[in-house]
Amino acid sequence: MKLVHFFDNGLSKLGVVTDRGVLDVAAASSAGDGIPVSVQEAIEGGAEALAALRRLANEADSACFRSEDDLKLGACVPAHRIS
Image (tube, one colour):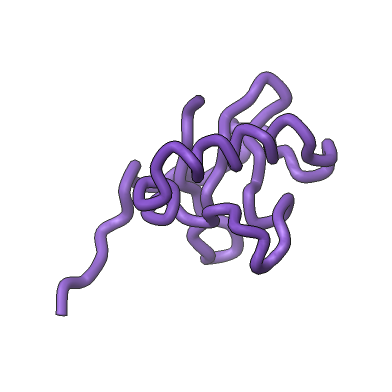
């Protein structure tokens, strides 16, 4: 499974690359459902987070998929400011 970080209307989003296109995770998931919505959350969530993303990608509505060619991709792991 390949994860991507992309921008949509100035917002940073997590995507999952599939044969159907790139799944917009935020568009396909609901708040509080335990699905990671950032690259950092996916990394921190480990195997459970990846399994949840895989399930979501398999079950998501086709309206939640985007063409990779139409996306503005970001860095693999976005930089976080250290306080």
